[in-house]
Image (tube, rainbow, N blue to C red):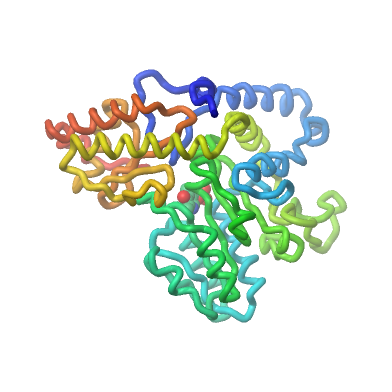
Length: 397
Ligand SMILES: *Cc1c(COP(=O)(O)O)cnc(C)c1O
């Protein structure tokens, strides 16, 4: 059994805070703090440029990639890290489209995160060969897969509602009609067991600052299935994805395998912090994590529904159909969340009316979840949320 008291001790958790937003920005792992200090002083500071070789900076994207691979069911050597998720969406989709040159549709769903759809729109426009991004309701994706579809591009867990797509079933459906599947695991990696190999995902991408606790703006990851890894075109043909970056050849030759999805100089400080953050997963059994996550989210739903008739569950009721977050709607969600945050309960809101709470067994206890529900009930019962300053919107919600 995974010892969640032990994993909790690995994090800096500020006094007086009930943190239900680890799905948006994970907390600081203590090991990351120590590692950052070391990479700054002992590596960059003392070794200067020599650290590329003697502190093994050049292989860090792949080594961190291998640690993420284990969490998403990918074989070693099939995941690399760097850039941001938006860039990895662009690369994965472009590579998938290039593998299906005679098809014209990118199929996605209306629950997908806006940046994924913006990037798809812009890419399709830039490629300019009659391609089209088609967006259907999440429950209509399977039926919309036909032989015009080149790529099915989906986010497994809906950022607003937590609704979970069946990755294996939809990928099988895509393959049966000759399409490829690109899966965004932003809200899945570190949230639930994932097996991209069993699901036969062609490409998988994700960010690492949510459930993986890599820190604000932490590098993204990309997995390319072995069958495509040596033929996929990286589109962003940067020198770090070249077979021999330090040969400084005039012409681009992609590196073998997923390494070609690297672009430029890797963000070593951020990657080092992420590497240290991944230590927290060493002793975690993902089946235990899933069971604990469901226990926490079910308890939260139960407590909120028993105490707060003012809010409505916006997530699937069946825990097997959810990721590791739960949403409720309230007409004044923004002000309610500000009142919660003022009382130390941190979740977030997604426009227009969604109160969103993330469940992260690595450092969140059932007792905290109950206390958060109690505080929500107090705020709603007393109307304490209805204050001018709670209605004033900040830039980041
Ligand atoms: C969080 C998230 C992003 C964010 O992309 P960045 O480039 O890291 O800002 C993209 N897609 C999905 C599905 C997300 O959940």
